[in-house]
Amino acid sequence: MVIQQAQSVWIELGEVDPVFKNIEFCKITGNDIFNKVLTKIYTPKLLVGHTLKGKLHDLFSILQSSPLPLSKEELIEKIWKINYRPDFDDRLYKLIARLRKEFNIAIVSKSSS
Image (cartoon, rainbow, N blue to C red; front, side, top):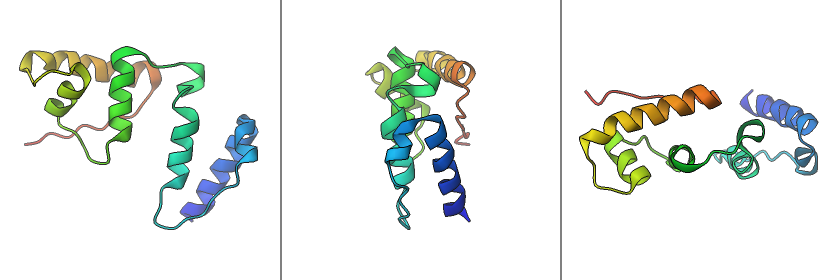
C-alpha cells in the first residue's frame, strides 16, 4: 500500500517537475531511497522557489539530516556554533516558529520530562 502511494506521488511529481519523468521510480524494501531522491532534488530549490538562507537554512538542514531527534541544546550548539547557553533558547524557539510559519514545515517537539 505504501509503495503504491509513493508511486502515485512520484507520478504527480513528474507532472509538476519534468525532472521526475526522467527518473524511474525505485522500489527498494527497507531503504528510504524515495526520500533521499526528493531531498537531493528539492533541497536546493526548497519550497516553491524559496531558498532558505542563514540560520533558517542551518536549522532546516540540521533537522533534515539528523536520523534522531535533537535536543534544544544540540540545536543551539550546531546552529550558532557555541557551547549551549540558556539565553539562546528564545532565539531557537523564534527560529523554529519562523520556519513553521513562513514555509509551512511541520516540526515536532517533545518535552524531555
